[in-house]
Image (cartoon, rainbow, N blue to C red; front, side, top):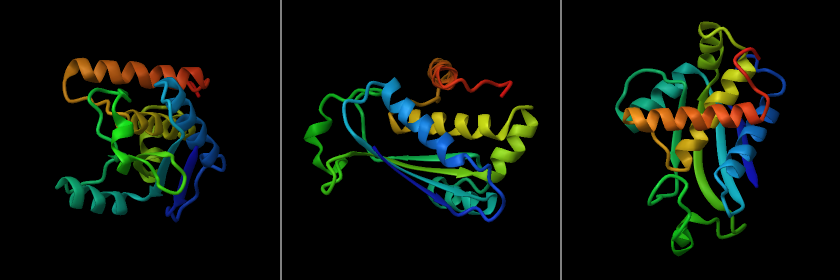
Length: 166
């Protein structure tokens, strides 16, 4: 498993952010029974940076908490059948499945942890789990998908012992 974490945030970040992100990503990969070694890139930024990315990539001119850029197209969420046929999904040097990129606004981690009255650790873990599910093809466009995705996020966090009381 190759997890690349780039910290571009200029403020103070919880000292264990790398450990939190890494453990959530590893658990999410196991949770969906991914049969491949994987690669994920995570970048931590501020609200201005994520606003610019959101504007450029989605034509939404406001900051958001997390953006996911999946590299793999699935026939259904976490359906790994047929992926081996897509040789561009695998890193030619390592053979790992390149899941995609995650961009997290640490400013949003701070504000949303205060808004929802839980720790920054919990918020960072939640955003990472949410984004990993997107990288596996899950979405929340309709109500049923939203409920399914929220349930999976909660299970991932609960399995890691990360709760709202955290």
